Image (cartoon, rainbow, N blue to C red):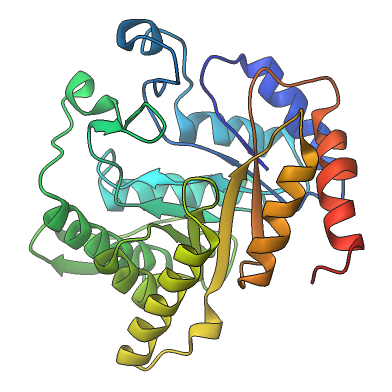
Length: 300
């Protein structure tokens, strides 16, 4: 499941995560990584950006300390917000606190523009927080370097790094993550250049499912990832396909159908985005209305 840490209290988020932690069918829980709320349909720009939003890694640390079973992470960390060596240190600390339950999600980070299909502002924080957006080409190249640095921070005692975007001298991370050789790396993104980074570095690949991306389009992008893997000699079966959908409380049948289509398309790591405000016992509702019926109907 995934909960957005915007326009919702810490107490409400904690309530949902604690409940999910007691339900075996819910295997993982996620937050997003925005510093300002994204604008929703029918919400004006100033109104939409004025609500509260909790910083993702700080909130994740608190939730890691308050849960015992769920795998957890950010879907996904915006690589532009934090320097990769610092991010590796933060993530290692969270994995220690969570006793080895971190799934490390990372992505390029959206551009500061509106998504015309959903009337949302993609990555609204750049100007407000003085974060250089740069070009998309540079951002993808930066992500590739960041993934290399983060993995080395987790697996090597000390190293230097001389890249185009990052330079490190005697970089080290102590303590290391609990998980060995390192926490699973999830990379989100669907563009061709990003998929090359996925092929090189990811254990899990995540996409946004319907209605934003059709099943046919996701099948095509999955085949592109397979081609990238073949080009570098990696078995594409090593990369778990992951997809997220926003559930509809009023029409769970539609959400179940989307989940079945995704499974048929090879996406086996499924993330249910729970819109706020959260109904009472929403984690149990998601289990009874979405997870159990989907798999009881023969989905593998």
